[in-house]
Image (cartoon, rainbow, N blue to C red):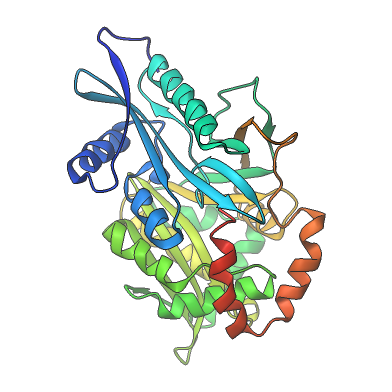
Length: 352
């Protein structure tokens, strides 16, 4: 970021139905190096319509030009507290700005807004550490790696054991295809998260992602020799990156190497499209997904989630690693899948 240019800087809020403002917002996001897919304006509509979260999408403007954005949403829950978060259900967030004073103005307005709303805390999901004076959480890391321009070079860059799993999937005659409907994906996803003891997002949320983002969101399904769905991933595309974000698989996927094949197929297709970065997404340290991504040759990079605390003494720990949730996780696994899928959306809206 550069120093402050001349002119008066103003912080404004993007109205939910301001289509022209959303276009200006997204044009800034597309060109700002610090911005991510989760800074796009469509997230305000998605969070409001699918989960009822009030969005506060702030932007700093000078002489008619946007210099920075900070998407926020209010998350209010009896179970998990009252927070202002940038951004629920996103792995990246925080300020994306061209100038230092725009970034400061947005953070100051976020703090003032948090106090007006009476939240317990403000949470900014930064990629880079911005506020060393704020409490932070280092539970999460991200995994990103360059996509090489040659398909075979990408295959050889996968460590030997995982490369053998990819080749096993190919030998098992697995196929991959794109869906514009989420039905098969949701069945795989819901079964998967139920086995792990966590509630599922509603099916309508995944369809909304495809509808809102168009070609920037895509579902890839892996099928077996008889055409049976084995594994699926919903990915986002942003600039020259692919972000596999939500995934699910059947129990049979493991023996057939469908998961490794799935991610290879996504990488292979991204290579063919000329994309440059494979973003394997966020994982908690010490988990199975963390180990899986490491085994693919990806190195973890810490994420810097920073907090301003107002009505709590410590950073919240609303995640499955918290020991107090273990009984709930075990109980959730015992629920019939149909009951879990009905009840899940009422709970998961507060887990963002």
